[in-house]
Image (tube, rainbow, N blue to C red; front, side, top):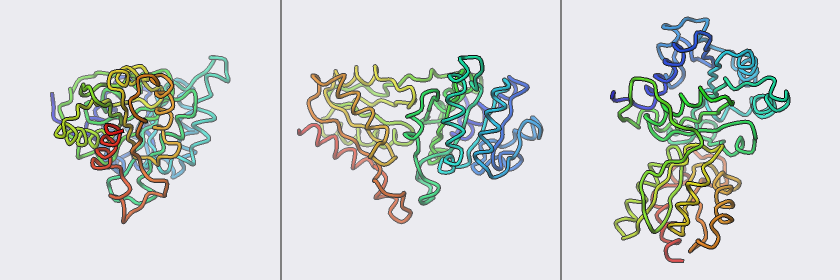
Length: 325
């Protein structure tokens, strides 16, 4: 297998898709010759032509309106929103058109060929307009799937599965990991099942759950906990919608404790849905209240980014609170 960072892995998945379907189009702001602001689409316009990989005007609503039409026609539409913070002008197109297209037509039409890629989260000193984690906004929308990878291998396999899925998918890419995360990735095609969490490490005392870049944080916290004699089970949720309740519940039944961590603000973050569901499903097995270690209920700060982001020490403190309850 080749060594790739997350950007190379995503580019490889897009390359395979472009070669596989002659009608596939990649479009968004600066995705053409420039290769996107993070260079995820580098080389693809040169390889497949300007009629298949092209820049759009700076209008996110227009990007998704066009994407819906293209996908409804039957062509695989790979739309890029340059930063997840700028997905909100397209919110109406996504939640009222993409997500409802199949339902409102009685399954006569759909936009299942639509994949929306967008970098999200902090870690690049981007301040309040280039650091947000908006996954929970879309998790309230039936008809969508939401996927977040944690490393290059996961990114390629999950992106290929998202593209082949017959539902519109929002693929959130942790921008902090684009070049920081490097690993072995097959050069050939492969897919990873959507909607299925992965148990990264088995343990007996407490379950730690996260997704995307936050996986590295909970793994660091788990190492501190292990040094203190606490056995941690680590789960990568991978898919926000649908989310794998069965895998999480099975783990919590075993350990009796759960810590959920995400970068988005704590109020109405997706961790709240997980906590509510798991307390219902596992109530008689819980040994302590479910802990959430999340971002703060403030706009994402620039100067105080390290204080805002849930780090390993905050997660470790939550582990100790849970164990000592």
